Length: 338
Ligand code: SF4
Image (cartoon, rainbow, N blue to C red):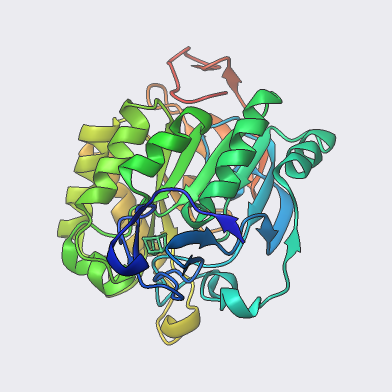
């Protein structure tokens, strides 16, 4: 167990966790909604510090982050638990795992070892992914500090339900956020993630982008009949364009039936293409389709001259026609880190 940060002591040795926007009040001997943080006699502890369920070296394209050092390799790490517990979770074996029973098996990797592994394997940096990295906060904060000192970069693959206080602690050490926007109404977020209100998520994205200057890319996994209403998606695309900027990449990904939504069909290609059209119409310059291998919308085209700039096949960059941050044909500025 590792002492947690971001919590407040209440009466009767209860505590309130301020790590994510659920702000659980936790009685002595109990854990929060995510089951990764436990109150022992009025002190909150993380049950997952340094406990790794999954670790591999993977390309940045798999996050997906398409405008952040394309083709680079990242040490990608995850632990257990989530604060959303979505019914269609693609990683439910670890996100919904019982942390106290330690299923599946975990190994302990101290932050300094993770940094050393990333350096030895010539990774660009460390990515905290697979389960919600916010819950792994103390570990990712220690690791991110060390990684940055060692000249590595860092990113979170997150649902952005972190609190502003916690974001401000890790903000100086985090370079990029690959964040979900699962819907654009309180009803949709209630149905998918069982949370009351999604305005706080928008505030986090805005603060990460504009206050901390992080590189931000957005993913929306389109679940048939659940978050695929055009009116909501139009509002979402408009918001991304207006608040995060027209150069923010928006990844619209195909839902693949899993877990408690295994009875649904995968998102149709026709629907994905229509939603891509919604994004482009809203003014976004880079709207990608995901989980559709071989689809041309996995590639980057120059918004000015239309030429193919980056071709991706199976998360690998197979063609690259940028010159610095400019289109290799017409010189148009392509936003991101290249
Ligand atoms: S991190 Fe866990 S314990 Fe803390 S508020 Fe969120 S769900 Fe509750």
